[in-house]
Length: 245
Image 1: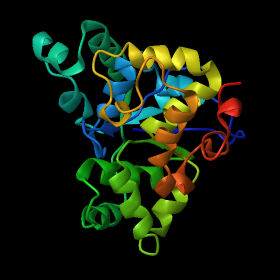
Image 2: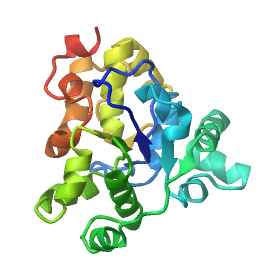
Image 3: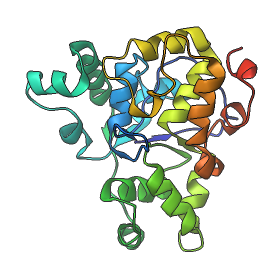
């Protein structure tokens, strides 16, 4: 998912609700695909509009043309089984209805080049190519494999890397931003109340978990892509006390 933004200096988010295009699959080593970060944030009651996170109008939020069909099953029973409960289904549906599809890509050559890069799937290729053409883009994704592949090919894909530098929000960085704005107690309870807890967090997601353990876990997944992250000064290497002010 992409959002256009104006040229104002970066500001911390004004709410605890975040949106992203992908997320970790269950398991110890998250590889993020197919829009599941939105599901996880919705399950934690942290999914609102991406525009609200950025302080931008809702009409500036874009998703891939297939996102709605891939993410939300038509049958209610299947949707509830996938997301864990009816409330999460409603949050995801409301979010999808507030977005627009990415405009057609003008630079087909760049899109073809991105498709040839290992670890960058068709959805991320479309988002990366659109980021070059949209003014002041911000990319929300959980596919760190694609981000790592992009950085590994920086010489070949310099335009894409430059467009995304300081402009990426991931599932983990969204949680760290929520900690910054709303404090540990609030975020902890939302994570504990999730009908389907994230596999990445299962080792630390306990009633007696400490903020430092949660932050360390989240940051460990961001180190390889931190040069691309938006709000990096708030979430990478900061102290727990500064996050939960």
